[in-house]
Length: 274
Image 1: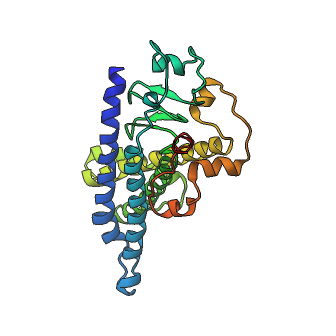
Image 2: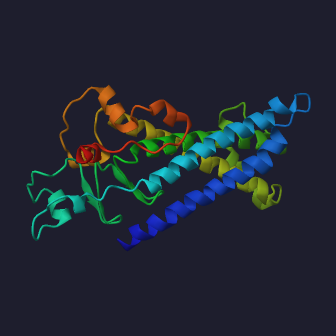
Image 3: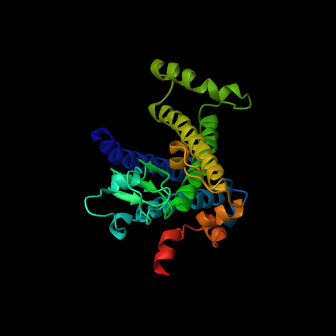
């Protein structure tokens, strides 16, 4: 448990550090050196267009990241009559049969809260993912993946021009790291160039991981399931996939694709307000 709590603090700091390094490299290194075209007007210059694209991707990734953290899991334990001597963890583990019990809820010992439609605990946000922040979490993964892949393309263009390399051969990227390590220790490669090459592989790994996780999460949403339900072997009621999507993304789903907006309230809260 101590290791998990430490990871819950270190992982968000690591993500923010990577984001800051990516922003500095893109804005102050890649864009000024690789997207300069004097023949075009300043309004439609490649540097300005690429900078606007990167800022759009970064703003959406960071905005949804903040909303995932702010939209904390609902503390359902204080709203439920668990009975005298009943613990929240006992109720969630199925040791208590209560009429007020909600399906797919889980008590997270790291958050010390009960999450409605619990999916998993995300260490990079330090928060549980549930009904209140699922949409923001998916959009965070999507835009983080796009921002990382955009940085890979810009970084490859920078390395190609700096080291006079060609990435026309698909194997050139795979052999770039071992070849660069040998050049670095022989003194033929600067430390700044080696750092950019290492960041290329880090961006690629994070981008592919976020893209794969986003696709897997969307498949679960279409089926009306969460990762917690799949892990526990819970049987869910079959529903149309459109209803499953609307429950997570809400009616203003198109706005959420371009602007970070707060996730729709969970079904339990809507029923409670009625």
